[in-house]
Amino acid sequence: MRVSVLQENLYRGLSIVSRAIPSRPSLPILSNVLMMTEDARLRLSATNLQLGITVWIGAKVDRDGSITLPARTFQDLVATLPPERVDMDLDERSLTLHLDCAGKIANIKGMDAVEFPQIPEFEADRAISVRGDVFKEMIEQVVFTAAKEESRPVLAGVLMRFEGDVFTMAAADGYRLSVRTTQLEFSVGDRAPEPFIVPARTLQELGRIISDDDDEVLISLPDGRGQVMFSLNSVLVVSQLIEGKFPDYEAIIPRRYETSTMAYTNELLAACRSSEVFAKDSAYTARVLIEPSTSPNMPGQVIVAGQSQEKGDAQAPLEATIEGTAIEISFNIRYLIDVLNVIREDRVVLETSGPTAPGVVRPAGRDDFIHVIMPMSTGR
Image (tube, rainbow, N blue to C red):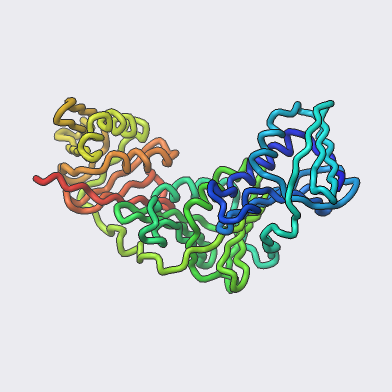
């Protein structure tokens, strides 16, 4: 193999595929990145057997070939090179890659590419297209809700469902639920797969990879492999699916409310962050007091209060448009902060039905995103 690439493109490609390198590989080859020529481009691949990432970068290919190299060493070396052309020449007998960049020379010993796990080909003819910017936002608004521990594997994933021209993503951890939908440009029709569960970590990495240049993301499920594939302009992400049945999330969503509160998102977020300073000493429990206006010409008021028995307390009032009755309800303040951080609209709506009923958070004026939070018990 003899190939030339730009340092910045090589480093970017290695940075992307390194997300799939395991910290404690079960096999030595999994510490390596596969580098091979393919269709006059350079292909970089890494996998931990659960998640695989492939990146293609432009290259001048003088001789085809392949090799696997220790990923951390290779990436660290490329990071030190100047932003110039990198010439790479493989000695196939010693499995050593010789690099030359603006006079800087290095040799890296690798392992034979035949030992690297095979990554399946993408089946574009069966793929479903989702707008890149929309998919990135959907991931952002759902993935944080998935369970961090894996005692219940299905809750450590995100449900994906296609019905006609509607694409739905949902995640829950037993205390909160996020559901985000979008309308596709074309109906999936008979191509709609059964609902499937993708590991949250896969989507977190995918969300970081999707760039402004990715107009669309193609989603494909190879038959009988228990995998899902996401194809971008020059990146392919392959992930194992999570087996099991996702909870009936629609049954969790409240269908009625007694009080609807609309406030400015940034003001409510600031109030939550203020109360978090003291709420962290009481399992992050903070009280939310909702008081409707007593006069037609006056706004209602929301007070977010956090208290620590040892350190003190904080109360942050803000004006709000409130319909319904007064209520006091306690939430895990971190959960409120998490969802407010992913709402881009200027105003947010909080719907409540009582101190022991779930609260519903959604962007004002939109019905494609809903977040349900279970209240905290205060012992009162």
